[in-house]
Amino acid sequence: MRQTASKAALRTGEQLHRQGAVRECAAADGGAAGGVVAQGARHSVWVGVVDRRLTGTCDCGSRSAFCAHAVALALAAMHDGIDWAPAPQRDPDRADAAATFRALSAAERGGVLDALLAERPELRAEAQRLALALLSPTGTSRSTPDAASTALSDLRRRWPESTESYGDDYASYAERPQTDACTYTEAGATRVHIVKPTLASYEEFAAGEGLPVDDAGTRRTYSRHVLRDRPEQAPVWPPPRNGPCWCESGRKYKKCCGSPARN
Image 1 (cartoon, rainbow, N blue to C red):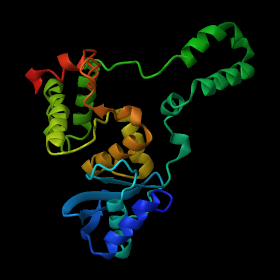
Image 2 (image 1 turned 120 degrees about the vertical axis):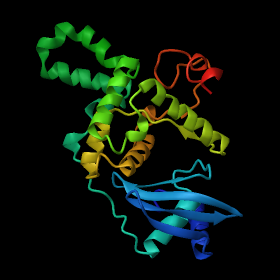
Image 3 (image 1 turned 30 degrees about the vertical axis):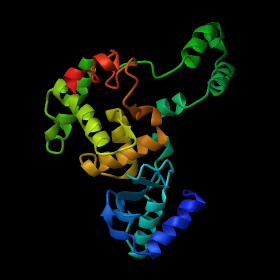
Image 4 (image 1 turned 180 degrees about the vertical axis):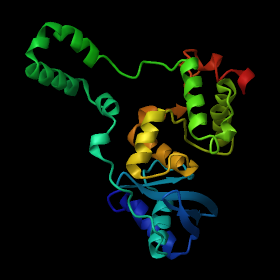
């Protein structure tokens, strides 16, 4: 916790814990969840260990990765002996190679190309084409409505019970994140993200952590993992009005999910 939280957060969190500010603390989603009262306000907090890292979420709006409320709850969880030990370390052989490559800088990708050409000199004739493929910016591809609809159908077929509330029509389902994001913002949330992972990466995460893939708690834990380790898959909502819509329809946000007719 000392490696994750700032000195100020540690100091304030320890004071809150000593003052009894943690009103409830219970095991939840592989970690601990509860309420912390500070300066007359009650905050909902979750703390846990994901990928061998301590992480926490709180509705206080702090920009800190581990705020004072999270520190207080973590101390209460340890004091109460709540079983929230780190999940098994993910197998590096099962790592998402595509996500790892996307995280490389242009210089690092150039090193990958140099290593490839050194190992396979017969490819030097294709060096220019390979350079364009390896060094071009990633993340420009879009999901088509047909692909998204197919993914939803696949999700419903695999886990029909835990995804029953999603429905089977993608157009109707796609309205839910927009409505939820509006609701959170109107309730006072200062930062809203929409997580946009792939089904394959979710299954890989669940298998690596030893978590049940059909459990809603696993999906929440995975969302926290994506927000921390793959922020490009969890953009801040709302996007600029003239920017591309978060749903990847290819249209501007103001003419898609951000249009008055859909809000």
